[in-house]
Image 1 (cartoon, helix red, strand yellow):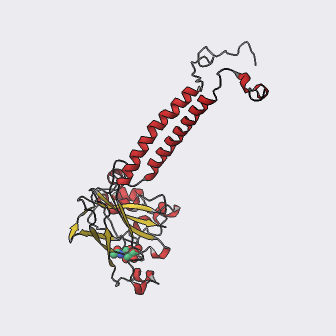
Image 2 (spheres, protein in one colour):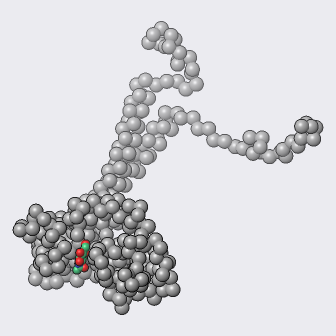
Image 3 (cartoon, helix red, strand yellow):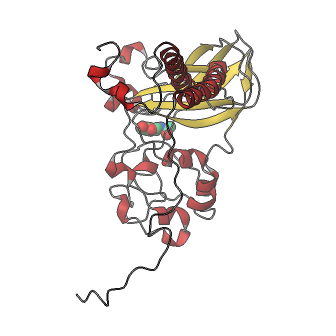
Length: 332
Ligand SMILES: *[C@@H]1O[C@H](CO)[C@@H](O)[C@H](O)[C@H]1NC(C)=O
């Protein structure tokens, strides 16, 4: 290469590495001040979050075992699969602290792998959105069409396995209304599920996997289905069932009438009903508060140690001779 013709890069402060730089020197004062600042910020934030989480009242009741009658206890599957057995089950929940509305009602499933690759893919996004795409169901096998080749809407395993336990709650002999409107994500109801797509041939033949859908209601208003179809990432998950808009007093008893329909017995899954209030940090979550308090605490601890070190064993700045071992005043 001809060096005379090689182009020199045009001058810029960047290419000549002349940009201003900040090279802080970690003096003891500076380090101690920053540790104290972080500690003083984090500890109060952590305590606030912790106490907020402490104010959340959560009642959780596992009912899958208790709701199988004794004479079926060794064979829960035959109980749940028999259409003639009595599935209604009464549970009484004690209220430890006043529940302030809105009270969220969840069902919690455990050991249910909604994140399985074959399961997650088993739906048709086009079909859920657009009535003209009702035949787009190649991803839905084995729940794609009926025996006489009519499409199933919504198709696929996710929709087919729709959770179908129901709950009725009451206190002091009065029914508590569970509001089921607005439990799904807005983006889902508005963009992913069509307001002119209606269920068809759903849960009509073969093995019944779960809940049924009212064919007169468009998918965008079938909020239980929409919540169910936002698949959970972990095998233990909670899904919103509804909301109660009245307070429930402390020491009341909530009578829960459960229709125990859903078959988790086949794979050893657990079912729980969860009632929870919320505060500004959301539901019960001690971790955020604890994390803040411990990080802040560690910072304060280090600051105190540096202060003690700085007071009792100070080292002059810019004095490298101090670093060499044989000139150290102690070893001299
Ligand atoms: C509920 O789902 C189970 C499968 O988990 C099914 O066997 C049962 O027939 C369904 N019952 C109702 C009432 O939808």
